[in-house]
Length: 151
Image (tube, rainbow, N blue to C red; front, side, top):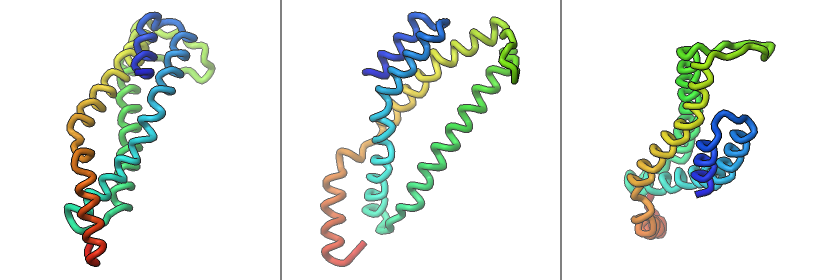
């Protein structure tokens, strides 16, 4: 809810830099607990994978999560860079370039709708995530297997 409030606040005044920074800080405060929970969920997948396949693959699963995070960030950066290039963004090492209106509109659009798209993907992913409902029975069976000396 805090992250959503931060995003909605941005919509009120999207062309003010100070307003944008404040909304980003509010969004970050709201998203921090969610980011912390992601790798905990990946740990649950390790247990589920062991339960389903009788093979424990912690390294592979966590490496996959890490690679997915890095690849996702790289892909998102490439898409945004392509959008800015198409909008006529002028790159300047001196920082004195005056951006065309199309580039400014593109930047505002990315800040407006990028988080909305990411949030939509997150909601869909969490709606499809059914492991929490069966996690206790999975863990009970894994404990029973370990007591019998099985994987």
